[in-house]
Image 1 (cartoon, rainbow, N blue to C red):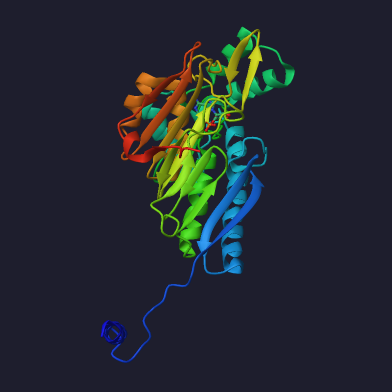
Image 2 (image 1 turned 120 degrees about the horizontal axis):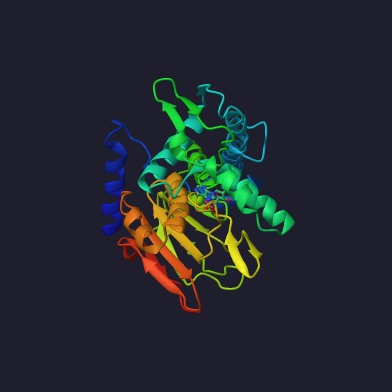
Length: 347
Ligand code: AMP
Ligand code: MG
Protein backbone atom coordinates (compact mmCIF):
# COMPACT_ATOMS: atom_id res chain seq x y z
CA UNK A 1 0.00 0.00 0.00
CA UNK A 2 2.67 2.57 0.87
CA UNK A 3 4.47 1.78 -2.42
CA UNK A 4 1.29 2.43 -4.33
CA UNK A 5 0.82 5.77 -2.51
CA UNK A 6 4.36 6.92 -3.44
CA UNK A 7 3.85 5.92 -7.06
CA UNK A 8 0.55 7.81 -7.16
CA UNK A 9 2.12 10.90 -5.57
CA UNK A 10 5.01 11.01 -8.05
CA UNK A 11 2.58 10.60 -10.93
CA UNK A 12 0.55 13.52 -9.60
CA UNK A 13 3.71 15.59 -9.08
CA UNK A 14 4.61 14.95 -12.70
CA UNK A 15 1.18 15.99 -13.88
CA UNK A 16 0.96 19.20 -11.84
CA UNK A 17 2.33 22.22 -13.71
CA UNK A 18 2.83 20.43 -17.02
CA UNK A 19 -0.67 19.52 -17.96
CA UNK A 20 0.63 16.23 -19.35
CA UNK A 21 2.45 13.22 -18.04
CA UNK A 22 6.07 14.13 -17.30
CA UNK A 23 8.87 12.56 -15.29
CA UNK A 24 9.54 14.17 -11.89
CA UNK A 25 12.60 16.45 -12.12
CA UNK A 26 15.69 14.77 -10.76
CA UNK A 27 18.70 16.93 -9.68
CA UNK A 28 21.86 15.57 -11.31
CA UNK A 29 24.41 14.23 -8.82
CA UNK A 30 26.89 17.00 -8.01
CA UNK A 31 30.55 16.17 -7.63
CA UNK A 32 33.39 18.26 -6.24
CA UNK A 33 35.90 19.79 -8.66
CA UNK A 34 39.01 21.76 -7.63
CA UNK A 35 41.31 23.94 -9.75
CA UNK A 36 44.36 26.11 -9.02
CA UNK A 37 45.97 29.00 -10.84
CA UNK A 38 48.70 31.55 -10.06
CA UNK A 39 47.77 35.23 -10.44
CA UNK A 40 48.28 38.55 -8.61
CA UNK A 41 51.34 37.11 -6.85
CA UNK A 42 49.18 34.42 -5.19
CA UNK A 43 47.71 31.00 -5.89
CA UNK A 44 43.98 31.13 -6.49
CA UNK A 45 41.97 27.98 -5.81
CA UNK A 46 38.43 27.40 -7.07
CA UNK A 47 36.36 24.57 -5.62
CA UNK A 48 32.92 24.00 -7.07
CA UNK A 49 30.20 21.39 -7.24
CA UNK A 50 28.89 20.50 -10.68
CA UNK A 51 27.49 17.70 -12.80
CA UNK A 52 30.56 17.16 -14.96
CA UNK A 53 34.27 18.00 -15.14
CA UNK A 54 34.38 19.81 -18.55
CA UNK A 55 31.73 22.40 -17.65
CA UNK A 56 33.25 22.84 -14.16
CA UNK A 57 36.68 23.43 -15.71
CA UNK A 58 35.30 25.86 -18.29
CA UNK A 59 33.67 27.90 -15.50
CA UNK A 60 36.83 27.87 -13.34
CA UNK A 61 38.93 28.95 -16.35
CA UNK A 62 36.53 31.84 -16.96
CA UNK A 63 36.97 32.82 -13.28
CA UNK A 64 40.78 32.71 -13.60
CA UNK A 65 40.62 34.77 -16.83
CA UNK A 66 38.58 37.40 -14.99
CA UNK A 67 41.21 37.52 -12.21
CA UNK A 68 43.99 37.99 -14.80
CA UNK A 69 42.03 40.78 -16.47
CA UNK A 70 41.63 42.47 -13.07
CA UNK A 71 45.36 42.24 -12.45
CA UNK A 72 45.91 44.28 -15.63
CA UNK A 73 43.63 46.94 -14.13
CA UNK A 74 44.67 46.92 -10.46
CA UNK A 75 48.35 45.96 -10.24
CA UNK A 76 50.76 48.54 -8.85
CA UNK A 77 53.74 46.33 -9.87
CA UNK A 78 52.76 46.51 -13.56
CA UNK A 79 53.66 50.00 -14.85
CA UNK A 80 51.23 49.51 -17.76
CA UNK A 81 48.17 48.73 -15.58
CA UNK A 82 45.25 51.16 -15.54
CA UNK A 83 46.04 51.93 -11.90
CA UNK A 84 49.71 52.73 -12.61
CA UNK A 85 48.81 54.94 -15.57
CA UNK A 86 46.34 56.79 -13.36
CA UNK A 87 49.06 57.29 -10.73
CA UNK A 88 51.28 58.77 -13.50
CA UNK A 89 48.78 61.63 -13.86
CA UNK A 90 49.11 62.71 -10.19
CA UNK A 91 49.53 66.46 -9.79
CA UNK A 92 48.86 67.14 -13.51
CA UNK A 93 45.41 68.61 -12.83
CA UNK A 94 43.86 66.13 -15.25
CA UNK A 95 40.57 64.30 -14.72
CA UNK A 96 40.80 60.66 -15.81
CA UNK A 97 37.80 58.51 -16.71
CA UNK A 98 38.29 55.07 -15.17
CA UNK A 99 36.93 51.59 -15.96
CA UNK A 100 33.95 50.14 -14.06
CA UNK A 101 36.28 47.83 -12.09
CA UNK A 102 38.69 50.55 -11.01
CA UNK A 103 35.78 52.82 -10.16
CA UNK A 104 34.16 50.19 -7.92
CA UNK A 105 37.45 49.45 -6.14
CA UNK A 106 38.22 53.15 -5.63
CA UNK A 107 34.71 53.97 -4.36
CA UNK A 108 34.76 51.05 -1.92
CA UNK A 109 38.20 52.19 -0.79
CA UNK A 110 36.93 55.72 -0.28
CA UNK A 111 34.08 54.42 1.88
CA UNK A 112 36.57 52.42 3.96
CA UNK A 113 38.84 55.47 4.32
CA UNK A 114 36.02 57.72 5.49
CA UNK A 115 34.62 55.14 7.93
CA UNK A 116 38.08 54.30 9.33
CA UNK A 117 39.14 57.95 9.67
CA UNK A 118 41.99 57.37 7.19
CA UNK A 119 43.41 54.14 8.70
CA UNK A 120 42.60 52.52 5.36
CA UNK A 121 44.08 54.56 2.51
CA UNK A 122 44.96 53.48 -1.05
CA UNK A 123 47.22 56.53 -1.48
CA UNK A 124 49.88 54.78 0.66
CA UNK A 125 51.69 53.84 -2.60
CA UNK A 126 54.91 55.89 -2.05
CA UNK A 127 55.21 54.68 1.54
CA UNK A 128 54.64 51.02 0.59
CA UNK A 129 57.29 51.35 -2.15
CA UNK A 130 59.74 52.77 0.37
CA UNK A 131 59.17 49.79 2.68
CA UNK A 132 59.61 47.39 -0.25
CA UNK A 133 62.99 49.09 -0.83
CA UNK A 134 63.77 48.67 2.90
CA UNK A 135 62.96 44.93 2.71
CA UNK A 136 65.18 44.45 -0.35
CA UNK A 137 68.08 46.38 1.19
CA UNK A 138 67.50 45.34 4.81
CA UNK A 139 67.79 48.98 5.78
CA UNK A 140 65.53 51.36 7.70
CA UNK A 141 64.25 54.20 5.45
CA UNK A 142 65.67 57.58 6.47
CA UNK A 143 63.42 60.05 8.30
CA UNK A 144 63.66 62.41 5.28
CA UNK A 145 62.53 59.79 2.78
CA UNK A 146 59.72 58.65 5.11
CA UNK A 147 58.52 62.24 5.52
CA UNK A 148 58.63 62.85 1.75
CA UNK A 149 56.69 59.63 1.00
CA UNK A 150 54.13 60.32 3.73
CA UNK A 151 53.50 63.88 2.50
CA UNK A 152 51.92 62.47 -0.69
CA UNK A 153 49.50 60.27 1.30
CA UNK A 154 45.85 61.26 1.92
CA UNK A 155 42.65 59.78 0.50
CA UNK A 156 41.10 63.27 0.54
CA UNK A 157 43.64 64.25 -2.16
CA UNK A 158 41.63 62.14 -4.63
CA UNK A 159 38.68 63.98 -6.21
CA UNK A 160 35.73 62.05 -7.64
CA UNK A 161 33.28 63.07 -10.39
CA UNK A 162 30.42 60.61 -10.02
CA UNK A 163 28.57 61.63 -13.21
CA UNK A 164 31.66 61.18 -15.39
CA UNK A 165 33.10 58.19 -13.47
CA UNK A 166 36.32 60.20 -13.36
CA UNK A 167 38.99 60.88 -10.75
CA UNK A 168 41.72 63.46 -10.22
CA UNK A 169 44.84 62.84 -8.14
CA UNK A 170 45.53 66.31 -6.85
CA UNK A 171 48.97 65.96 -5.20
CA UNK A 172 52.20 65.44 -7.12
CA UNK A 173 54.03 62.15 -6.34
CA UNK A 174 50.80 60.41 -5.32
CA UNK A 175 50.70 56.72 -6.13
CA UNK A 176 47.78 54.37 -5.60
CA UNK A 177 48.11 50.86 -4.17
CA UNK A 178 44.97 48.73 -3.94
CA UNK A 179 46.82 45.68 -2.56
CA UNK A 180 44.61 45.73 0.53
CA UNK A 181 41.36 45.30 -1.40
CA UNK A 182 42.19 44.01 -4.91
CA UNK A 183 42.34 40.28 -4.18
CA UNK A 184 39.05 40.38 -2.28
CA UNK A 185 37.46 42.16 -5.24
CA UNK A 186 38.96 39.64 -7.68
CA UNK A 187 37.59 36.68 -5.67
CA UNK A 188 34.14 38.32 -5.43
CA UNK A 189 34.05 39.06 -9.17
CA UNK A 190 35.15 35.54 -10.13
CA UNK A 191 32.42 34.19 -7.82
CA UNK A 192 29.81 36.33 -9.63
CA UNK A 193 30.95 34.78 -12.87
CA UNK A 194 30.66 31.22 -11.51
CA UNK A 195 27.15 31.99 -10.27
CA UNK A 196 26.18 33.41 -13.70
CA UNK A 197 27.18 30.03 -15.14
CA UNK A 198 25.01 28.21 -12.62
CA UNK A 199 27.80 27.12 -10.27
CA UNK A 200 26.36 28.52 -7.06
CA UNK A 201 27.97 25.94 -4.77
CA UNK A 202 31.49 27.33 -5.14
CA UNK A 203 34.45 28.74 -3.22
CA UNK A 204 37.37 30.91 -4.36
CA UNK A 205 40.42 31.35 -2.19
CA UNK A 206 43.79 33.06 -2.63
CA UNK A 207 45.35 32.45 0.78
CA UNK A 208 44.39 35.69 2.49
CA UNK A 209 40.91 36.11 0.93
CA UNK A 210 38.12 33.58 0.51
CA UNK A 211 34.74 34.17 -1.12
CA UNK A 212 32.04 31.48 -0.95
CA UNK A 213 28.68 30.93 -2.65
CA UNK A 214 25.98 28.45 -1.62
CA UNK A 215 27.06 25.66 0.75
CA UNK A 216 28.39 22.32 -0.52
CA UNK A 217 25.61 19.70 -0.92
CA UNK A 218 24.26 18.52 2.43
CA UNK A 219 26.28 21.04 4.44
CA UNK A 220 25.45 24.30 6.21
CA UNK A 221 28.41 26.18 4.80
CA UNK A 222 32.05 26.14 3.76
CA UNK A 223 34.49 25.55 6.63
CA UNK A 224 37.29 28.13 6.53
CA UNK A 225 40.14 28.10 9.06
CA UNK A 226 40.90 31.29 11.00
CA UNK A 227 44.63 31.84 10.60
CA UNK A 228 46.67 31.69 13.81
CA UNK A 229 49.41 34.22 14.59
CA UNK A 230 51.99 31.80 13.18
CA UNK A 231 50.18 29.90 10.42
CA UNK A 232 53.42 28.18 9.33
CA UNK A 233 53.60 26.35 12.66
CA UNK A 234 50.14 26.42 14.21
CA UNK A 235 47.03 25.20 12.34
CA UNK A 236 43.72 27.01 12.91
CA UNK A 237 41.99 26.24 16.20
CA UNK A 238 38.78 27.92 15.06
CA UNK A 239 36.76 27.83 11.86
CA UNK A 240 34.17 30.00 10.17
CA UNK A 241 31.21 28.16 8.67
CA UNK A 242 29.83 30.35 5.92
CA UNK A 243 27.62 30.41 2.84
CA UNK A 244 27.47 33.46 0.53
CA UNK A 245 30.08 35.78 1.95
CA UNK A 246 33.74 36.62 2.27
CA UNK A 247 36.47 35.88 4.81
CA UNK A 248 39.80 37.67 4.85
CA UNK A 249 42.84 37.68 7.11
CA UNK A 250 45.33 40.55 7.38
CA UNK A 251 48.48 40.57 9.41
CA UNK A 252 52.24 40.39 9.50
CA UNK A 253 52.57 36.57 9.41
CA UNK A 254 53.87 36.35 5.84
CA UNK A 255 55.16 39.81 4.95
CA UNK A 256 57.32 41.78 7.34
CA UNK A 257 60.85 43.06 7.84
CA UNK A 258 62.96 42.92 11.00
CA UNK A 259 65.28 45.88 11.54
CA UNK A 260 67.29 46.47 14.72
CA UNK A 261 65.23 43.82 16.55
CA UNK A 262 61.92 45.49 15.59
CA UNK A 263 59.39 43.74 13.34
CA UNK A 264 57.60 45.97 10.79
CA UNK A 265 54.49 44.72 8.94
CA UNK A 266 53.79 45.35 5.23
CA UNK A 267 50.68 47.16 6.48
CA UNK A 268 51.49 50.79 7.23
CA UNK A 269 49.89 53.49 9.31
CA UNK A 270 49.07 56.16 6.68
CA UNK A 271 49.51 58.92 9.29
CA UNK A 272 53.09 58.02 10.27
CA UNK A 273 54.25 56.05 7.23
CA UNK A 274 55.61 53.37 9.57
CA UNK A 275 54.99 49.64 9.17
CA UNK A 276 52.81 48.31 12.02
CA UNK A 277 54.84 46.83 14.87
CA UNK A 278 52.22 44.96 16.92
CA UNK A 279 52.22 41.31 15.89
CA UNK A 280 48.60 40.59 14.89
CA UNK A 281 46.20 38.59 12.75
CA UNK A 282 42.77 40.04 11.94
CA UNK A 283 40.09 37.87 10.33
CA UNK A 284 36.93 39.51 9.02
CA UNK A 285 33.74 37.87 7.75
CA UNK A 286 31.23 39.81 5.63
CA UNK A 287 28.19 39.04 3.51
CA UNK A 288 29.99 40.74 0.55
CA UNK A 289 33.36 39.39 -0.54
CA UNK A 290 35.05 42.64 -1.45
CA UNK A 291 34.60 44.32 1.91
CA UNK A 292 36.20 41.63 4.12
CA UNK A 293 39.59 42.31 2.54
CA UNK A 294 39.52 46.07 3.10
CA UNK A 295 37.97 45.88 6.58
CA UNK A 296 40.62 43.45 7.87
CA UNK A 297 43.44 45.75 6.72
CA UNK A 298 41.71 48.76 8.29
CA UNK A 299 41.28 46.95 11.64
CA UNK A 300 44.96 45.97 11.61
CA UNK A 301 45.79 49.70 11.58
CA UNK A 302 43.02 50.80 13.97
CA UNK A 303 43.91 48.24 16.66
CA UNK A 304 41.43 46.12 18.64
CA UNK A 305 39.31 48.70 20.49
CA UNK A 306 38.65 51.05 17.57
CA UNK A 307 38.64 48.09 15.19
CA UNK A 308 35.74 46.38 16.99
CA UNK A 309 33.71 49.61 16.86
CA UNK A 310 34.60 50.11 13.19
CA UNK A 311 33.42 46.65 12.07
CA UNK A 312 29.93 47.29 13.47
CA UNK A 313 29.44 49.94 10.74
CA UNK A 314 29.21 47.14 8.16
CA UNK A 315 25.97 45.15 8.06
CA UNK A 316 26.50 41.50 8.96
CA UNK A 317 30.28 41.85 9.41
CA UNK A 318 32.29 40.15 12.18
CA UNK A 319 35.93 40.47 13.27
CA UNK A 320 38.22 38.06 15.12
CA UNK A 321 41.49 39.62 16.30
CA UNK A 322 44.55 37.81 17.68
CA UNK A 323 47.43 39.97 18.91
CA UNK A 324 50.71 39.51 20.66
CA UNK A 325 51.88 42.98 21.62
CA UNK A 326 54.28 41.58 24.27
CA UNK A 327 54.63 38.04 25.60
CA UNK A 328 50.90 37.40 26.05
CA UNK A 329 48.41 36.51 23.31
CA UNK A 330 45.24 38.64 23.31
CA UNK A 331 41.99 37.68 21.57
CA UNK A 332 39.17 40.06 20.68
CA UNK A 333 35.84 39.13 19.08
CA UNK A 334 33.13 41.36 17.66
CA UNK A 335 29.46 40.73 18.41
CA UNK A 336 28.66 38.46 15.44
CA UNK A 337 31.60 36.09 15.88
CA UNK A 338 29.58 33.72 18.07
CA UNK A 339 27.10 33.11 15.20
CA UNK A 340 29.80 32.23 12.67
CA UNK A 341 32.78 30.64 14.39
CA UNK A 342 33.20 27.05 15.64
CA UNK A 343 36.08 25.30 17.40
CA UNK A 344 38.26 22.91 15.44
CA UNK A 345 37.03 19.31 15.77
CA UNK A 346 38.93 17.32 18.42
CA UNK A 347 41.54 14.92 16.94
P1 AMP B 1 46.19 43.13 3.21
O1 AMP B 1 47.12 41.96 3.09
O2 AMP B 1 44.89 42.94 2.51
O3 AMP B 1 46.03 43.60 4.61
O4 AMP B 1 46.86 44.33 2.39
C1 AMP B 1 48.15 44.78 2.66
C2 AMP B 1 48.66 45.57 1.47
O5 AMP B 1 47.88 46.77 1.33
C3 AMP B 1 50.10 46.04 1.65
O6 AMP B 1 51.01 45.11 1.09
C4 AMP B 1 50.09 47.36 0.87
O7 AMP B 1 50.21 47.12 -0.50
C5 AMP B 1 48.70 47.91 1.13
N1 AMP B 1 48.57 48.72 2.37
C6 AMP B 1 49.44 48.81 3.42
N2 AMP B 1 48.96 49.61 4.39
C7 AMP B 1 47.74 50.03 3.97
C8 AMP B 1 46.75 50.89 4.53
N3 AMP B 1 46.90 51.46 5.73
N4 AMP B 1 45.62 51.10 3.81
C9 AMP B 1 45.43 50.53 2.60
N5 AMP B 1 46.35 49.74 2.01
C10 AMP B 1 47.48 49.46 2.68
MG1 MG C 1 43.03 43.58 2.94
